Image (tube, rainbow, N blue to C red):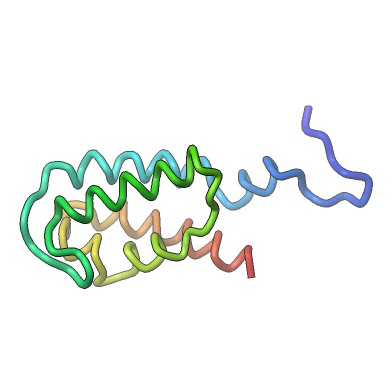
Length: 111
């Protein structure tokens, strides 16, 4: 049973579920596995797919274990024609778009 505060505001868990935060984390782990299969290339601040992969793993760890909820960097990485698209291309397009939509929802929900 979910508990609500007296003023009917969402609990932290309800808020995260509403913004699909747990689904986002699951998708990010999927991207990490897919990205690990790529090498070379470049995109913006990343000189290679390996460098982007390391940054992505670090960001996921920060979110899961460091209790960080600033997702703005991820929002940029998964925006159309940015790092994710540059390294993974069509193979990861649907996944990247789904992640960006969730990040965008989170971004707008925190303004």
